[in-house]
Length: 354
Image (cartoon, rainbow, N blue to C red; front, top):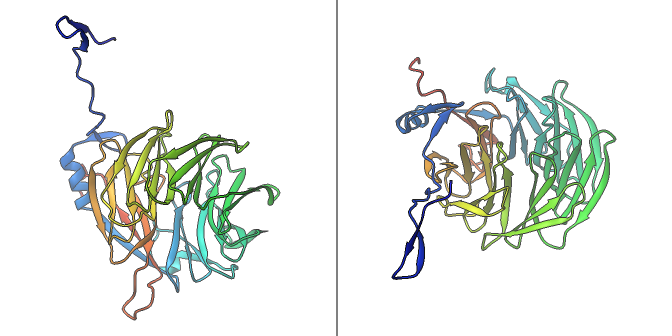
């Protein structure tokens, strides 16, 4: 319905008898069911944190598989490990994946298969694993030291980025590199959209490049930050793209218009990592600040801080529950890196059972 127009004869202006929406929604849900703000507070206040210890050096990356039953971690100790959190956090409920000869900087699961994992290492290889056997099923040699990896939503391709700012596309059927793209600017992180037809690259120039996929024709160069853009993720509902930057801001972009609609300003140090909850309701972000911020996506309100004892390197929400895995530079009592990861979990606030 068009707003009613009123003619102001004296001023010669057209004004509108209409109060536009503020753009901020305060609605909260638990798995689709509406809950109150007080119940949200209760949900976060009653949260639990569990710890998994199994690496000999600090953990750089964590990721859940597509059914939320497995959690993988990659470490400076040259190994990856697959955990089964619903069984327990003890190391006996995990499987070590050995083979890399340098740091495992990032890993990602096949979004179409719960048992296939890809790891990117500074040893200039990408390895594919079957978590059921703990065996490496394929090794792809790359030209540079790999620091970024992501699996396409259809499961057919893997993108890997190296320290030379080259992005390589790997065919997951043939295990061959089918495309190499050398970028003239610093490439920090990469991601596909959920529709598999756009590819996002954050740069050292403070921009986000939006490419058509698979042609890699540049569609947009988004400018919303005053320093390097480090991390990027599309939300599960396909409404938004989130970007974290060295300017300590997280920006939220509308994926239809690619206009910046909101920013999150809780952190004071460069944003190292971010992630959306499975329903797109919350966004977690972390940096050298000794907390992880969890904010409400639609209102921009910071809901909760998860206290940490060190800078965080990685956060990842479960695809099915309000479980947030995270890891960073925590130090053990002996002064060495703890090699740990933690899982922050929340349950239905309407459930009074203990």
